[in-house]
Length: 152
Image (cartoon, rainbow, N blue to C red; front, side, top):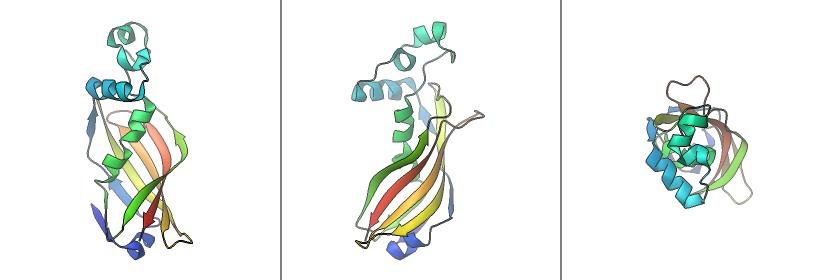
């Protein structure tokens, strides 16, 4: 894990590869909890029997938004901030769900800091290239640019 101490060190992250996180299990229990929290009970996510019969994947798959919601937890394994008053999720650019996450799969994050820009209020805006991989899959589950504001 990389530790950055203060805004000046955040500025130096541009172009830096952060590596990969540990694998995390995306099981049916996690998928069901996400469905319950969001109200998205589409059968492709929550009905294993129907998926065995009708889904091209043969099993349920995680919601795309469940996959991207793992980003903060996974990113925390790669980068620790010290002497920053707060980090704010500013959004995502170019978010694409490029492959399924079948129930029972493990995923991990691969991240690079693409750009760091100063803002007028003394904070910095950090843009990261993020790829969420599925263990054993040819295609990643998700690719995006994550935008974070770091406050001094």
